Length: 355
Image 1 (cartoon, helix red, strand yellow):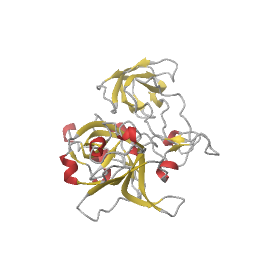
Image 2 (cartoon, one colour; image 1 turned 90 degrees about the horizontal axis):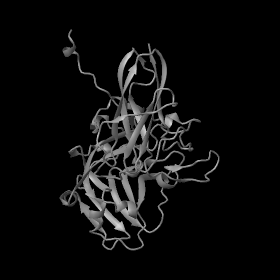
Image 3 (cartoon, one colour; image 1 turned 120 degrees about the vertical axis):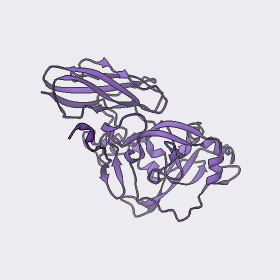
Image 4 (tube, helix red, strand yellow; image 1 turned 60 degrees about the vertical axis):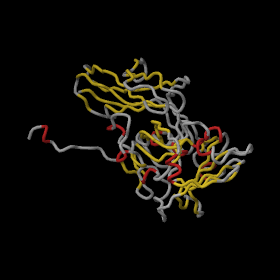
């Protein structure tokens, strides 16, 4: 059988939980800048919502001059905006915290990206206006259920501050990679808050409420909060902007390699500014070399990087990679430990053996 007749092999999502469905992207096998829908990671708190009606409306009310309910058609007819943006779960890489923390044990695949098309939130808000007292906008999704530790039924709801809501790149999206957003990723509308961890990008939008206080829903005030202390809540603050980060996609951790030339490659991303530099160490962090950045700089999207390695000496190697962004933020040697395990962004590392 010659090579050309080999059946095609393709990666699949890596399942963490089934109900609700939480699956990782096979990040080591994703090439390019658009993750196809089949391989886009899935993060859910509840089972998928049921839509009882095919007539879809999005009400906007609260601290607005003119409350308004938008139909699907109205939103489609407004001027659109398209952005390429990373969505990264704030629990991405939680598995690597030491001491260990509880929660979904994501490895490196709770991240994906592609092209989102929709309407700037600020465009919608021009039709309702905002009162001077408006402070935050609460986005409620159709997904609901019981939270662990409480027998209350809640919808998934999050708020963002007015300033963030009015940034032109904050959009109500209805397309992903030139197709309607797939049901499992929020059809017909989801919020996309680029630069922030993905818990902010509420799926299956049900309604938007403008408020003049601080939203205290459980996914805002209890979850998605950094708790730096194990014993108490001192020093807690909300999870927002994505930290500067990188992932080695090839070679794989603990891979056995023959001597020879290898292209080490991966991705790097950040929530503020752009990636300016990616460095690699082949001696466990004693010396660092620059990597080549192989994709263009775009705000909100990952850059791909590579490095030619001449692996002619047998032995074990610890390969480390760290990224720097235009804000001067650099991946730390150790992660910022927090009780719920959010925002892991320590220098990425793998070990390989050349035989």
